[in-house]
Image 1: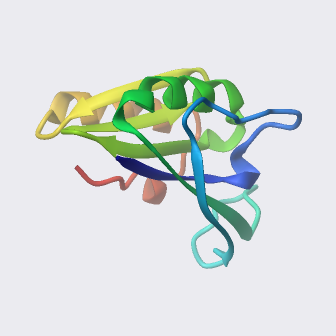
Image 2: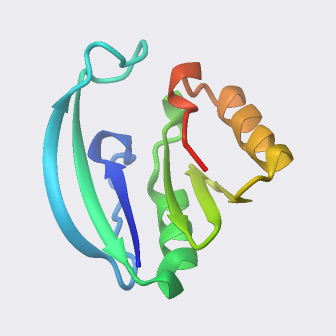
Image 3: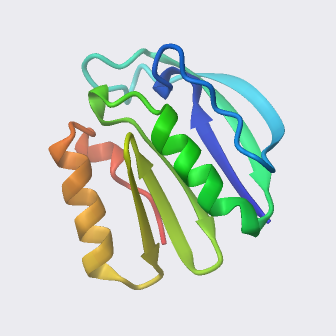
Amino acid sequence: MITGYVIGESLRPGAVFTPRGLRLRGVRRMDVSGSAAAGQPTLWTLVEWEADDADAAGIADALAAALEPELGWYADFTVGDERVVVFAGRVFRIRRGDAAGRAEAIAYGRSVGTPEHQLDWTE
């Protein structure tokens, strides 16, 4: 089973995020005023979800279609030995220990405006 979050404010206006197999685990609001970057809202809505491993590709594709391209928003989750990092229109699947793949995803995040301190996903 995989679990993940999507930040409600990271979805582009009009986006619908309803991939097959997604199950809602919870929703909470967080004050991120201490770490939000310029232009980002200071309150985030975290939508926690879960799905079966077999649904990972569909969820990644649905996120890539729904995320707002401005401000470098992304979502990430782990499936098996891969970290899946999703930006608007782009999906990275990084195997545990793949420094080059991780560096590529970080470089892409920088290129689309993801704040440096938010490029901190773990293996």
